[in-house]
Amino acid sequence: MLVAPVLLGCCLAQAAWGQDPPGWEDRPLLIADGPALPPPPPEDAAWVVAFRDGREMHEFLERSVSYGFSGAVLALRGQDMLLRAGYGLRDRAGSEAMPTTARFDVGSIAKSFTAAAVLRLAEQGKLDLDAPVRRVLGYVPERYDGVTPRLLLRHTAGVSPAPDFSGLVDFVDAEPVVLAAMASVEPDAVGAAFAYANAGYGVLASMVERAAGKPFHEAMRELVIEPAGLPHTGLVGEGLDLGPLAIGYADRPRRRPSTEGIVADASPFEWGHRGATGVVTTVTDLYRWARALQSPAVLAPSSRDAMFQTGPGDYALGWFVRSRPAPDVERLVHEHEGTTVGFQSSLSVWPDEPAVLAILSNTSNGSGPLIRPRLEKIMWGGVARLPPKAADPPVTPARLSALEGRFGIGAGTIVVRHDDDLDRLTVHAEGQDAVDALVPLDPESRSRVDRWHAIALEVLTAFKDRDPIPALAHAHEQVPERAAENWIMRWATVEGGAQLDRVEVLGTAPGELGPLTFARLVYAEGRSPEVVRVLWADGLIAGMSRAPLHGPGALALVAESDEFLAGFEPRTWDTTRFFFPPNARSLTISGPAGEHRAERAP
Image (cartoon, rainbow, N blue to C red; front, side, top):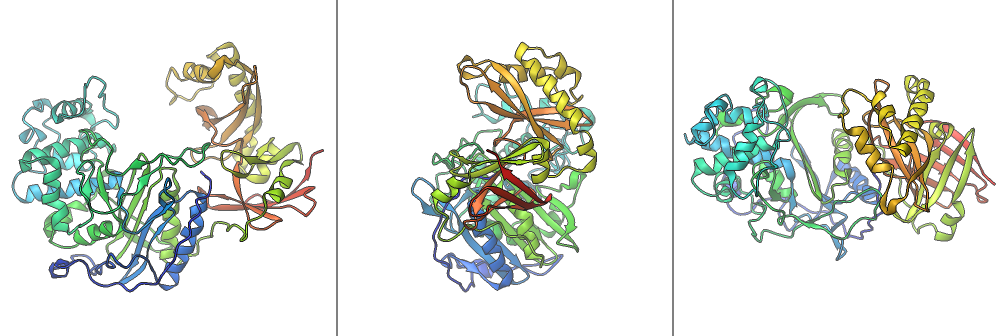
């Protein structure tokens, strides 16, 4: 989703790179499956942009800042460091540029650290990967003896992705949290089904603490962080001065980017989070982590083999292990992503090449994961389309204001408006003819549009009378029983008591999970309208939610010149260009749906 641009001026310098901090070069690197990763750039080499691929990735990331990306990135292929650089702002409140030494909360990438700690304790004979959890945590009931550390590490222990923690007074003590997680175990799923469960790694964290005989923070530092040689890595709540902290931002699509940030190491590190999240590190230390796992510094070869042996769901022990085209040759990759409030991250390691791509972002707006496959494509010699670049000098506000208006196309309308929330021009469609000019549907979906529109109108209009029956009649079996009542409560009456007056169907567009029908809810008593979207599955309603912008096909526009504006959709990486002649009486649209012309409405 697009957000207002963050403008950053920085000085980019080519930098040589060489040795790690003293002592690291003495650690042996014994590689079982592939060539060794080279040492990372020294910390004082603030920026590394090398080779054609590195320059292309750098340009891609610089442009992506305008679309919400902010963070640090490191990319290595073979023995060549292609890129290590920071983008956007470390701290928006102080307009402080992002350094490569900034420390981020890496979310679920912490699971690879927890897995390594468990494997080290197994090497030391302090726990058995295939013995019941109860052997370490004696208070766990005997009926859970089928649950073992290996199954927890693989997310195949039957632990629910959402255990019921509601009866807990706090999360300070491990035992009640562990018991609540274990109570969620589905007996038939133990050892069979893959179900990604943070709570399972919380149980593992408690086992690490108990087996090591010391607090979890101390155990992780002794078992993993120090042996791996990670000088800028710690855990949430430690309060260690290991370098500047990235300030995280939980941006929402309809708001300007917030300046109220989340400090990377200040979130409550309670039981339930420990083990699953909570590692704070830099992009260089994340590379060191990938490099350390190639060596006996952390794990013996047999443990390293176990760590990357996959189970259901392509999940091994703390890592996904997959084979996918990069871009057109199948390559083995070890990877994990992480998301927590204000932060997103990903680490991909190709052990046979070798190659590493690490992306740390201090915003949870989704831009980081969307960028990863594009950078990966460039890294393996492909061509990724660049996001549009704003004109320099920028187009004047007067010219942009002159472009606002409504442009007719068939029976629909393209609406160009100045969005105060995003502080730029946006475009959206009203009417299916206009939607088709912006975001084309596949032929099967297009043939069902009229029926979907009729159902959406019937269901949403019934909300005025608080009647759930139409929604229940058209709901998919995956929709919870109380969903219709919840939808009515949410949209029949809004803040201030304004009542729903009428419903206007705007059109249907493709979505990530399926086709989405957009409808405008108009309220009485001067309340601003809302736009909701209805998700379809098998011709039935699978969900409803507020639309992030004004309607289907919504895009925020970047002015490339006085006459050309571009809308960029980061989920599909499609660019749609809008040409306005000097008099702005018409509009030509060129994009995934081909070329269309719209005339300014009187």
